[in-house]
Length: 246
Ligand SMILES: Nc1ncnc2c1ncn2[C@@H]1O[C@H](COP(=O)(O)OP(=O)(O)OP(=O)(O)O)[C@@H](O)[C@H]1O
Figure 1 (cartoon, helix red, strand yellow):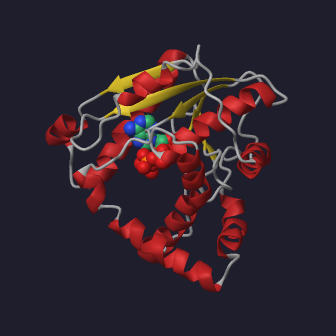
Figure 2: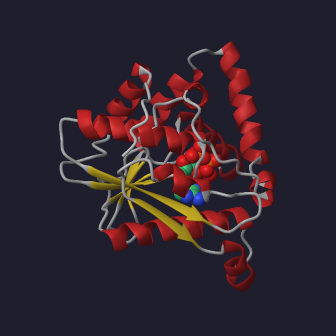
């Protein structure tokens, strides 16, 4: 097995460790399935998990899943080759979401349909392979943008959860990058030359204009209020853990 030497920034490790600890994301003997799209965030999280596998005070296992939705402009096949270098179990699932959309998509946007199907496939793989936790690569910028979008468009104070239980109540979903800024991940991906897969799905490019709008808005506001993301995190914190509900 080739074991490429990756040096992780201490702050990155500390922030992920703190989030895992604060939200009790990983428990002893958990089997965590990390969803890796090939973007900088989930690829970075893969390396952070490898670090924790040997340094965490508790024993846990982890594997990786990639969903190939068979969409022009997103070619994740190179990831299969990348993950051969590691001894982490790797699952590559192919499913033509576009074909499924033609058959059964009603009303909603293609992007939300695709996200829902991808999530369903991740749950399926987790169940099939005996994993009890699904880890996603969303970060603090994602959470802050979602909060603003939800408040401004839907009048609801809501965002992505750091830790929750799925509707079927058989899997926990965690977001270990909850305390990490996107720029920290971008820097890490650049310095370590992570093999980031370009996602240029035409549908994705239309829909995130709304997210992009809020991203730019928040980043501009941050120049005036340097603690903006820290403050937003404090505001969001009470609603980030949904494992205790129901
Ligand atoms: N095709 C996919 N296969 C596996 N996991 C995915 C896939 N698409 C999204 N995910 C999971 O959902 C998270 C958020 O997805 P999103 O589309 O917002 O990010 P991304 O642009 O794919 O890349 P990144 O890995 O940088 O977050 C990802 O970090 C990853 O954990």
